[in-house]
Amino acid sequence: MLQVAFIKQNTELVKERLGLKNFKQTTLVDELIQWDDKRKQYQFELDESLAKINAASREIGQLMAKGEKEKADELKQLVATLKAGQDNVKLSEAEKNIETILYLLPNLPSDRVPPGKTPADNVVEREGGQKPSLPAGSVPHWDLAKKYQLIDFELGNKVTGSGFPFYINKGAKLQRALIQYFLDYNTAAGYIEYMPPLMVNEASAYGTGQLPDKEGQMYHATEDDFYLIPTAEVPLTNIYRDTIVKESELPLKMTAYTPCFRREAGSYGKDVRGLNRLHQFDKVEIVQLVKAAGSYEVLDTMVEHVEKLLISLELPYRILRLCGGDMGFASALTYDFEVYSAAQEKWLEVSSVSNFESYQTNRMKARYKDSNGKTQLLHSLNGSSLALPRIVACLLENNQQADRINLPPVLEKYFGAGWI
Image (tube, rainbow, N blue to C red; front, side, top):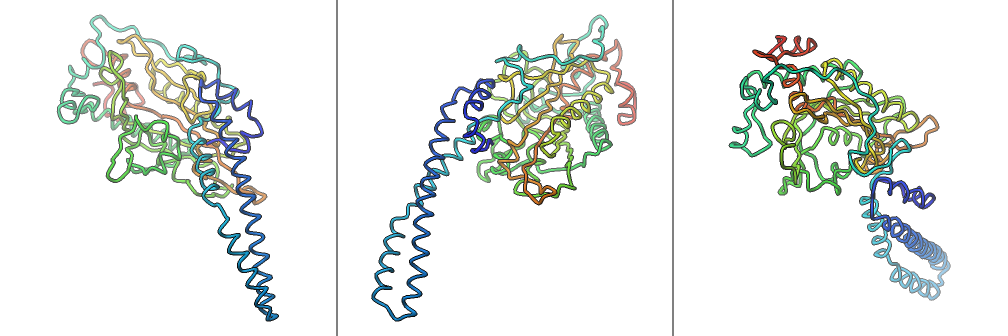
């Protein structure tokens, strides 16, 4: 979350940057400042009262030592009156309101974020790869999945519901091959592999900004008050909640494969067919916690890391720098990766790589101690490396032949063959 001191020192700048994100409730900034002024006043009054109580208490001890009980009793009455007049309730109310407002304010976009309100305003940074020319009779991936018995969408609908497919035979094997390849690729780049829990508590969801922004998109196990993770970013980043690490330990680089769960409320129509939009899907994530200085250089290296992974899969791709109106709640800057689906003739998002600066780490109190012994907030970054469903969709569609589906050579080691 944002820091109160920064907001008070840069009020108009904060409102301006929130406007770039198309955040409409900028009056919350003024409310926050008012509540912080009240908090300071309540704290001053409380401190002043405590100082008088402490001074009187010391004097009572001295009077009792001298045998001046009558004067000591008078001071005891004063102390009782001062204690009765203390108003911790007002201070607690102010602190609670400040915290509530801070949770409602999104992160400020960086200077590199372009203006805009919709995905149409995103900036295409660059494109790579070649769009394939498909043979006659080519079909989208849901038909290929049925033809080669790779994925059963109807069975998933029967057992659970729409958006929970069954992967079968070579379809399951392809999933496993991609997951292992992605993990090997990430660990070779210095990321430490984790296998985290698939549910997190409320504090973890607040820590990375899923709550209170995305409660409608998360599956909630209400009896235990656990949330099914929408991405491995949540448990990985929260490893360092309420933690102070040594500067020598930085950067912290983590990767994990997990199933991910998203309700995707309101999704319907042709854009959700097949693997285009699922409620449960597999994803390999990369996360870094780094010093503030240089975090944007780290972001650039993460973008390059994901780009090289897509190049190795021989998929046509493009990288978008998201505009203010299309960015996530907690992000300061996000790059989206899209691959081209030849049979559907459209671009499909397969990765987001973001710098959250200190927004998440301030919520989580994830810090490090610098060389001067001073405690500093870390910067957090994360990216998909990669999300599988649309990668699978494009691999199937873009590589289909009359009698088989070719796979990129890099997967042969993991899949055991160069085709399906």
